[in-house]
Length: 444
Image (cartoon, rainbow, N blue to C red; front, side, top):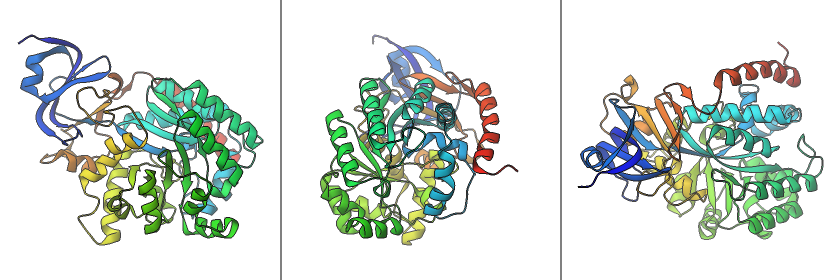
């Protein structure tokens, strides 16, 4: 048999492929060339057919696709722990919006770069972000090497990025043009919410998403309070309001979806729209529990996200998967709902599909982009290992990640980042802590 050369070979004690058959292979190997997976299968087959540099040789590893954070606000890492134990609207209007008004392009970039470092360290290879000054989030994402779907957050009121909606809309247009063909950064159109925009604004953003062929991302149905305000202001529940102005379709991505009824779920399923579940943030802000098991039964496409670090406090997708699984079991009193495989799907292949990523994304299969992470199976919380999918959802914390790669490029390995100068970043963030306290009025 002719030996084929490849760039990289990885050996795994366990390989979770997330392919169409959801193969889990013990004593496996993955061959990688030109940023893509050439082959994935039993080690004897891979090692006899492919020759290349073996990464992490002699290690006991769990290999799996990189995790996909389908909704976050990267620069909000700077506000981690600034305001806790508050309901959503009080937290947002009294604490987050005021200090966000003091952001500068540099604080946005540094906050986003810190987020990228955190996500890289904990096995996230792609994320979908909404924030103002999104061009500076893009700078950070590009430096980090992660895949990113980025939208300029569009509000109907002034903010540090723009003074008028027209100015913000121009920034969204520029982002769509600048990153139209970028290999790792994809633009989105991101109106913030129904309560921070007008119907005319939403219609304009929808037209831009259609003309740019991008996702249209919005917070929706996050609380019953939001629903009541929408009914009072627009005479309809949030989803019906969006539907009435033509903003529901396959490109629609709704963050949260806590207050959705069964008729609305059926409409989302029929339209091919996506709901991004953010369980930890919804729990912490007491927003409620999104009916994700019922959404799945009714055919709604779902993905998983952390929301921002100001409302979640971490951007770790391993703990997000665990909360997603446990929350719904407790809430429904049904131990069978949100099983480990379904939750892992949300964080990998289903998330990739929802974000419109390239074919094979979220899997380890021939032709798929080599967005792969490795976990150290010698960690005590991962011993013994009978079912690696169970461990990924219920046991792993994220600190077990010892390798993160995107397109076959190693971005993190055994404590070291390859693209981010983490000590320098840490020094800059240390200085920003005092700035945040000052801007928020917390000088202690």
